[in-house]
Image (cartoon, one colour):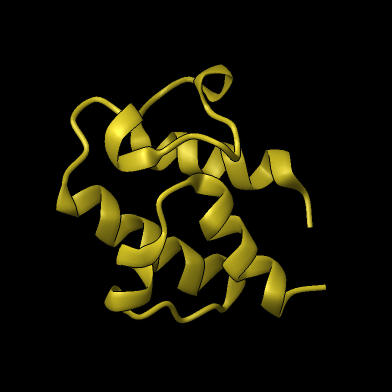
Length: 77
């Protein structure tokens, strides 16, 4: 799976330039104006684009974009 494509999708959801994101980005702390709608949009993107169902509890355990990427990577080779 392409890391840059995933980061671009996250940049679109988080409304920040791609250059500001990496897998190490702590999306709740590092992104200005983080809110629950961005969280919901992320969960929906994972479901629709990658067919990965992430429960809210599991989502809350993710702290970085890399944590989210790992959830997708476990499902998609």
